[in-house]
Length: 212
Image 1 (cartoon, one colour):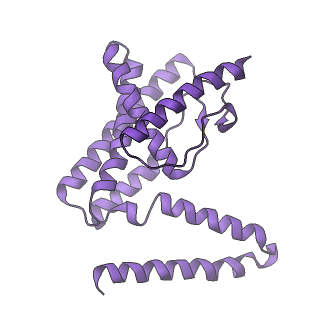
Image 2 (image 1 turned 135 degrees about the vertical axis):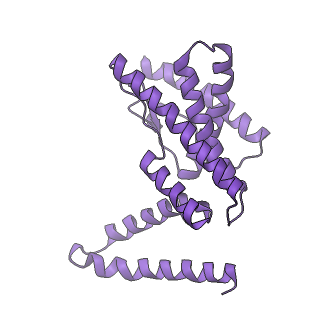
């Protein structure tokens, strides 16, 4: 059966992923890769269901998996573009995690390079997919969001990992949980005070960081 075939392959992939995270001392809570955790695994572009941080760790692992594949077959442009896209996406996350709160010109230069190179490779992948008449796996984060984050960092010079992306995603999840427990007629009245309280706490935390 197709599902059994995927089960075996995913089990091997997960063990290799675990080995990579242990060797690099990267913490995660990613459960085993299984067909049930893949959205539309029967299609050519399955998506792994994962928490935000775990997805970021898997992205870094996949980037390293692709590099030797691209080196082994340099004439395969598709693998080359896929590797470029994933490698610069993973590097974007890594550099953000190592950078300080306030960004230098060199930081912005690296972020811009990662954004441009990754999206340029994805554009080539999209063009190839259209010509072949095949669906292309979607990229995360969405490109317009990536551009907006880069623009904010370029103008404000503050590292987005301290206020954007994963933390915001987690907070949206909390709002959804609250919404599910509230009376629909009073939804805004129940959620907004909690939302403003979260914003207030975030502002106070930032003020303490800068000594205001």
